[in-house]
Image (cartoon, rainbow, N blue to C red):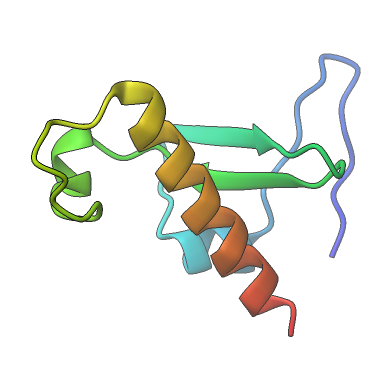
Length: 83
């Protein structure tokens, strides 16, 4: 699947990808760039929807820990979808 990039650096996310991610007009997306050069695009979701994804550790996780957990989960899901 491919899409062109305009002179302004804009592109259209293909319909099948928008449907897979549940994206609609006005939604925001987040890009994760991994050290191996892969890029993962995910819908930006409210922090409240992330409640419960980390195991209880006796303390509140930091925002960096939450970001890392989200990125790791996104990368894992992306790699599974390519199998």
